[in-house]
Length: 96
Image 1: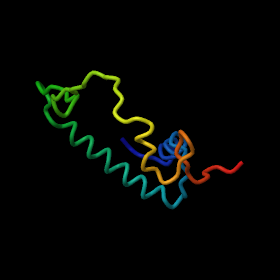
Image 2: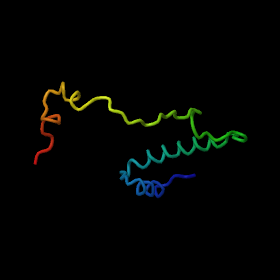
Image 3: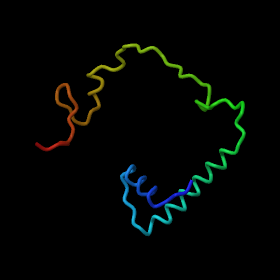
Image 4: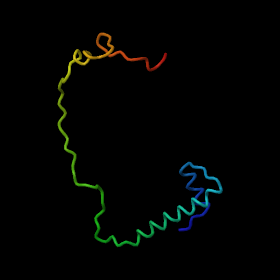
């Protein structure tokens, strides 16, 4: 496949990029190298090779969700540097 200025322009539009005219030659060389690499890989005999979908065969081991109270509100607020009845007090983040 030959990479032309029109091909680079189409790719630029699709990728929403802007290239300077001087950069197009460098991009053309890089794209040609990439296509040559893919063509080299295409020469490999992959007959009988299973497609790789996942890297490993491990399955997620998930536990059931169990509702439990591990800490009370009083315990949570006990060591708070600043609190207001039932809430933590923090510095103002958003100004009105």
